[in-house]
Amino acid sequence: MSVSYLNVDEYNDFKNILLKREIKTVFQPIFSLSSGEVLGFEALSRGPENTSLENPSRLFDMALNYNMLWEIELLCRQKAFEKASDCGLDKLLFINVDPNIIKDPQFRKGFTKEFISSFNMNPQNLVFEITERNAIEDLKNFRKILEHYTNQGYKIAIDDTGSGYSGLLLLAETNPQYIKIDMELIRNIDKDFIKQSLLKTLKQFASSVNIKVIAEGIETEKELETLIELDIDYGQGFFLQRPSAGLLNILPEAKRILNRKNEEKKRFIYHSPVSLPVGEIAKREIAISPETCGCEVDSLFKENPFLHGIPIVDEGIPQGLITRNSFYSTLSSQYGVYIYNRRPIKIIQDKNPLVLDYFTPLEQVSHSSLARQESKLYDEIIITRENKYFGIVTIKDLLLKTTQMELNVARHSNPLTGLPGNIIIENKLNEALNSGESFNVIYVDLDNFKAYNDLYGFENGDKVLAYTSNLLAKVIAKIGNSSSFLGHIGGDDFIIISKENHAILCEEIINRFEEGKRKFYSETDWKKGFVCTENRSGIAECFPLVSISLAVVTCDQGSLDSVAQLGEKASKIKHLCKKTPGSCWKKN
Image (cartoon, rainbow, N blue to C red; front, side):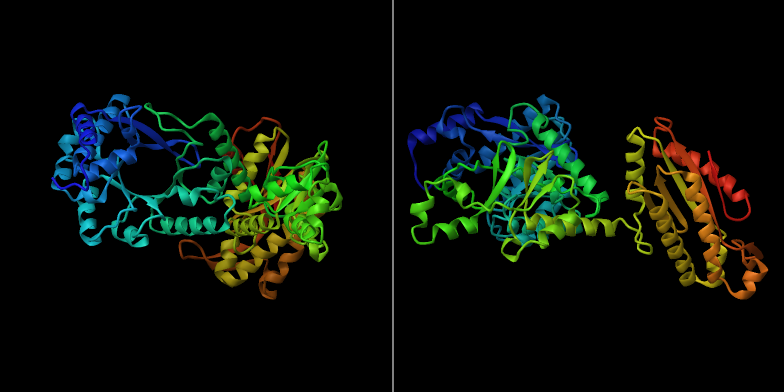
């Protein structure tokens, strides 16, 4: 045996652990950051309690020193399988594996199907968690070894991504199903834009090659919220749940925050900067009283390097703002420290910061912030709710959220008309159904549009759709109100959700459509009142000019339970509209 050093007592203690199988397994759950459901459990090994070898790092360092890494790894694995089997684990089990061990022929024997099945385990539920911290000399050969296991159904996770030697090369060569982001990249990610950008890039890469991302070491509410915002798939950490001998679910408080943040995120998809209240993105940062002395403010800025502005509040009412730049600029003046260090901050506060109500739309916030004098352009915006201090919004937060929302709106909008598409439409319908209020849904459909498209071409067909879209928007703007909604289902189908008088809306739409459609026809076809082209069977047929049908479903309080029910009702009314020649509207 070749060892770096030999401490007889220590060596004997270690041998006793192996002989007596004094290894304890605890499980740390890994949760979906979109639902809070358990993906699986990472098996963590501990040495005998109340000893120096209880710490797993110390235990494995000693195993390496005494050339017993294989023996301790085998024991840890066996204990993990036994414990998982006893607990009735039916989720994924993440097993930590040293890259140097996985090449060992004994390792293969330890992972035969017969060996695994003896613990009632399925290879498809096992994930080899391979640390990136150790250099792997022959990556190509290592990949072949991993393929041996993945071909049998085992999964691969690269642990500590972002902290090791191999980096992206290891990811490229091993083709894992999961990558686990090192906790050092997660720490304070809510305050570090560079970390956020790096993680966003890793997530984009992972999504493009069908790899799921797991964030390790989540320890604060803000870290969790930021990871959800970045669309990270899974997470684990003390804030979600600590390691335990049992199979635990997510902590109730963490689940509440996770659900709330995902609901907020979902709302952002369906909002635009015109409609989203600024309070939805406000941060509940600390506030100080006007009597706080300069030395305390100095301590706050030094203890919180990412804090750039502190609201000054008296009995819940905002009184002013002190920014990092203005504070230290004042202190740097002659006798500044001597004069202001022990005096109340109200002496040097900005008494006229930008203060806006929670429900101010982001677009209006952007205009208001840009209207400030240049020296205050990047100062924090104080947000109130019912005239009481609520939180702050930074210009960076405002720009990021506005850009993100504009991209979301573009992604979920019809490319021809720019109107909201089906995802937003379904959300709006559910929102209306859940409101408990009465409303009308008007399904708009163009009749004989295919015949027009076939004869006049797609380019002219698109012009008819754009015209219809603009017409509907103008009528809603004239007759509807700010809560009315217009969406483009697709093709020649549109939808209106409104609380206004449906009869007035429908009559106005029909009148305007009939007045304007003439410009889309040749003089000959207009005078004839019909067009001739091939039908769906390829046979020449004459069709009436394009007309507009409006199927109205009136939804009284609680009369309909779902979007599907609403669709069924609308389908019957649309069928009646189609039987009526020319433009018309009908209701249930």
